[in-house]
Figure 1 (cartoon, rainbow, N blue to C red):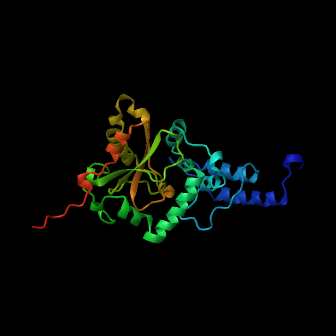
Figure 2: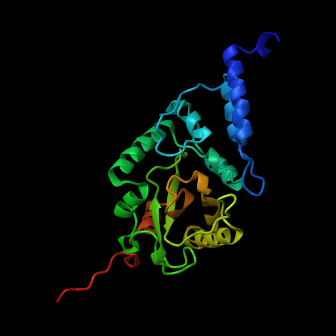
Figure 3: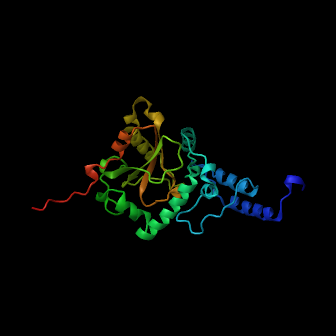
Length: 265
């Protein structure tokens, strides 16, 4: 082999490692995207197009190949997700390529490690500080068996650790104490649960934005393998160019979500 086709011994060993990793990837063909982004990232690393940076030895949650690549970047090198990018990613259900800004990802990893050390789990932290006290502890007893059917069964919050988004885009998380059914094989939503969530998003978010509402709202639910908080059901909603007042209306705590206590006479 000659010129740029010649591989050093080190690259040869890396190429063998690449083949091993590619063969180990599970290609899903029944609705979830094929992990081509992982293959491309590995190939780019082998061919020297991406800098290699070893992620922390003990990551607080499983790092995707995209996460590992992001950790090799500076914030200046990072490309933010704009609205068209999000539409394409969510439309193709290619959720594994969603990424946080490098400095945010590092802070999120540190915060997650510290939070787990203090509270034992992310679930415990959320139950103490972010979710309605009336929910109690898992397993929950929802008012309705249908997700988002009853106001007491969900909580709308701005994401504390959003993805790297262009200005004007807000990342919201809607937590549910009702189970959202998923396919056991893929971890993705069933057709029925997808319709239930879509109806809720349209009623709660889209309709409040008027005639252009549909163009300002995107939503998705991470497959189980991509969730950093697996014990608590939640969906992600992206909204574009919404007012502060409407955002506050969406995220205000309702009386039905508060703990009620009997008055002592």
